Length: 362
Image (cartoon, rainbow, N blue to C red; front, side, top):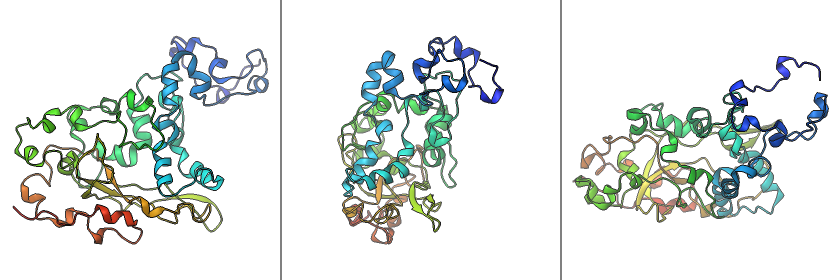
C-alpha cells in the first residue's frame, strides 16, 4: 500500500498503541477488510463510529446489555414526553421528526469514551485513547453546556456558580455515576423517575432526617425541593432544540435566548426520589405546533403535559437571595408561578402547577 498523505491518516497516537484497546486490530471495532492492500478496498464496510452491539460486547457484555436501554442511548425521556402528548411512534412522520429534531442527542459508547459527541461536532479526544471517565469539558458539557454547564461554572449573569464546583472542582461523575449512565430504564421513564439518578440527600442525609441543626430544614422538611432555597439566582432555560423549516424549505432549530428564569411551583413529577410538594420550574419552548413543519396534529394530546417543567439547577449555594431570611421568599409572590407567567403557548396542564396562595410575610 503506498504511503498516505497526513490528511488521509487517522489520528492514532503512539500512547494508544500501548493500551488494551490499541492492541486490538482496527477491524475488531471498525470492520473493513484487513487483507486489502488498497485504501478503498480496505475501507469496504467500514464503521466510523462503532456501536456497542458490534464493538464493545465481547469485553463489556454486562455494561452493553444495560446501556442499550439507557437514557443516553435511546432517549427514553424524550419519547416518554412526546408519547404523553399523544405522539404515535408507529407514525413514520413522527419518527422522522424525532430523528431530525431529537436524536442528535443520542450518545454511543465511543462518543463518551473516545471522541467528542456528534452533537458537539465530533473529533477524537486524545489520539484515539479511550478514557475510562468521560471528559467533563469535552463530553459532559459539550452536550450539556448551554444550560447545565453554564450554571455549574458560574457563566450566567445574576447567579453564582455551583458551590460543588467553585469550592472543590467536583466533577459531574461524582453525582452522575456509571449506574445512571449505563443503567437500563423502563419505557415511559424520565430522568426524574429513575432510581439511579442523583439526589441531594445521597450526600446530605441529615437534611431529610431532621438532624442538620438548621431550623429551616426542620420547618420545611421534604415539602420543598432543595433547589428552591439553594439555587443561587438567574437560571438559563431551554433553547435551540425546537424545530422549524424556513421559507426555502431548509430545516433549522429555533433559539430563544430570553429564557433565563425559574419559578417556584407545584411538583409535576412527584416520585419516590423527588417527593417534594414545591419545586423549581423552568419554561420550555414546546408548543402545540412545533412539529407542524413535518406533519399536522403530531401531538394531539399536547395539553396532557405542562410546559413548565420540574428543574434542578446546577447553581447551588448555601446562602442565596431567597434564603437569607424568611421574608426573602415569603411575601414575594413574584417568585411563585402564577397565571400571568404562563404565556400564550401554555398547556392546560400548567394550570395545575400554579401556587394558589403564595406564603405571606412572617
